[in-house]
Image 1 (cartoon, rainbow, N blue to C red):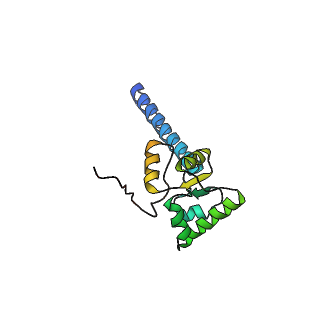
Image 2: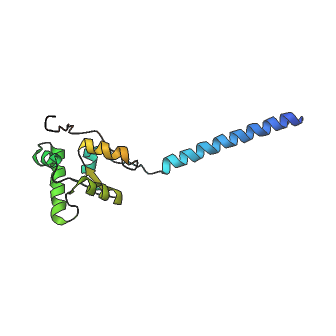
Length: 150
């Protein structure tokens, strides 16, 4: 530029201005690079995506109503999921879950997703910040307890 500030205050103000511009551009570039290179934490957001991938095994508790739901379902996604789980159980790749505690243990190891009843998912997710629920509740149900009067 042909116009060079001569006063010290104007030079100081322009130096701060260019330093500010440098910080803004650097922050933008760093955030853009991080955004473009980071892996998605939850690549799976629906049951259909879970069924159509091969890297994460999944299973259900064999003694829950979820087992009955999947084994008797006419929905193509649920029946495909159940067929895969039966196949994995037969070949030893992934067996049915014995209990919700077993599911939590396998989830923490990695490469596994437990398909549990929604009240259990809510209970465990509220107590363990590392757990997350992926997708919507697909078969909402409520629990009832029978007790003696009095």
